[in-house]
Length: 336
Image (cartoon, rainbow, N blue to C red; front, side, top):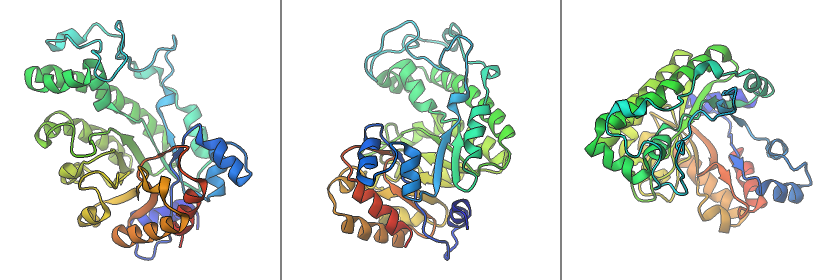
């Protein structure tokens, strides 16, 4: 049975599905540390193969190839930004018409040939793919984060217009990507971080007005092409999980275990409606625990959230302070 078949059974909530895992995304500085520990080549793929990882994340964003090398979106267009709070190029926008003077990305510059070639190399794995589509963050950058939240009250029509403009591109890009992808991958994966350690950045009411409609548009593309929908959001997002389920999200990642309301016990109420990828705390537990403690925690979380669980760290970025032995212990316990 291939990893792709194993993970499919997990996503089908098959009680007899074998244990599966996803390493996540080892940081550039982490790769040589793990490679030296395990005497392997210093590449992510070598790490994945050593751990017998069942999944691969191959985003499609690199398929945007502007002839002048411009990025799809540049919130610093004409201004200087050093922090998330710094004003972006639309900080002073008062009406939707103020958004017109910007070089909006053109879907005709999309070429996914190289992305498809990467996916073709991993047909035995469960591939997570699609445009990352971080529209929430990009709107925040175009306005400046605090300014974004203020404009939701003072200029809601401008916020809605900018969000729609950005999501128009991602909808068109995903449409083109998945039309050409066919059945070479099974999961549409995209991400926006809506949570802090304690709660959402914005109220559930504002989320439903300014964010959820865009979600539904993106998800509709994935569903059109028969893909399961996997959403990434760090932080405490428990207050909107019912909205995510209603909008068509099938899989939630990464389950930031220490954030308010995001423990395995809290999320178990949704295990019949969602699958989960993540859940093993990467904020402090992975850093400080022993390998045996990691194994016990994996077994505990599997017992609560299984069978619809792909064991993985509670954030995909594996930092250099995570011992190689602990990642190996997670992989071993996941497959028990």
